[in-house]
Length: 237
Length: 237
DNA sequence: GTTTTTAAAAATCTCGAGAAAAAACGTTGA
DNA sequence: TCAACGTTTTTTCTCGAGATTTTTAAAAAC
Image (cartoon, rainbow over all chains, first blue to last red; front, side, top):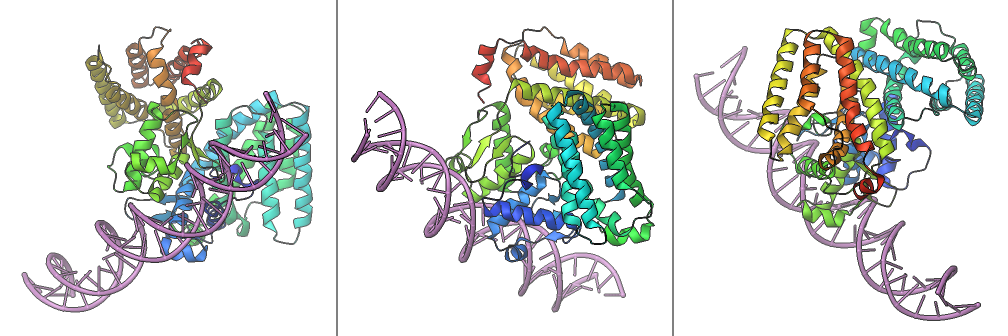
């Protein structure tokens, strides 16, 4: 919703202002965990790190509140939004509900162009998966995975639903970074995506939403089962 | 979510900073329509109206992007978020889905304290309705109506669901102001609220959600049926 | 040894002024 | 009359410095 400055789809167009540049750099650092959950964000410090003035940085931080990646408190500055297992469970369940609903609408409304986009997005994702084998070039795969999910629900007419989902997806990405290193549940993500894509193309909404729901849930489960002491190293709230 | 500075529940605590003061004043003016939809928000102008510096006002505007009440565009400043019938339909449908789901969970999880809060909120709303007869003291009624809906779903454990709903409620309020002057569908809102409250207290989730869904939809219908030329006077997007 | 008080340090919040961009305007030419 | 162009005006964006507030740390009192 909102606009390119503050919403999730700000990855497409390039930044025109310093505020936006700082906004993106900060967002990336928070999602990737370079800025730890709960960490204090001191403007005087950060303005040097990101090469902008104090006011500019404050504005970028204000923008990040939209995404619930930053929280602020009265006269006590900004902090990186904390993380917790409960929060991720909430994110996951809410996302399952909304994304399944959106997918159902998208399958019902999608036209030929949508099918084409879906096929293309899946193809690009597959290529990225092949390229990624052995390497840890997460960046490109992550981006194409995002687009794949986005295209899946793109034929859903509700802009608000898609807006909320873009926020939740971004939130989930923070947690997904954790399951990178610690992945107890063996998954064939490619197979999941393929089945999902085929069910969507076949207009089998029940099957597609079932796969999608399970797909989203699995990431949560893989993190849920990590021993708590190992998790707390990462989830420093 | 976020915090008191930027989220919907910022009405409770009082503002500690000028940014927050300006944020609230601006939000109120946008919701009440004093700042027309689509209107350009010139910082140089507004900083005098709200009695703050340019940077402070910019930050307040950035905060309002969280609420999707303001949009910004590259190097071309801020604008009041536009309105449209399609948008309100989307808001309404999304809200019906989310709020009914939240109510169902709230009814399932709510304890005695929740019942008490609900009864109290309904009572305060009723009192405000009585007081309001003949006058147009919308302010107090509006606030208590908001709290009534908030308490209804307060026992729902999903913070994200409640966060999204607070945004949607705020958005809907913009449109509800229109149906004030032009109300073709005769409604007994008090009766709707009472039936809703009683169904919730009786833990009849099916009945309660049915009433709630209809309750939310009715406001949209009453605006939908207004002739388009009359509407366009208000909906200047 | 613990708590309270007091002072110094750091950080936040705020403003006004200067550079860069966009919009408005009048002029020129077909 | 209309369109294209260049100049002026407005507005946005950006920075650095000053005033409050919070935090930290040390000293004093119990």
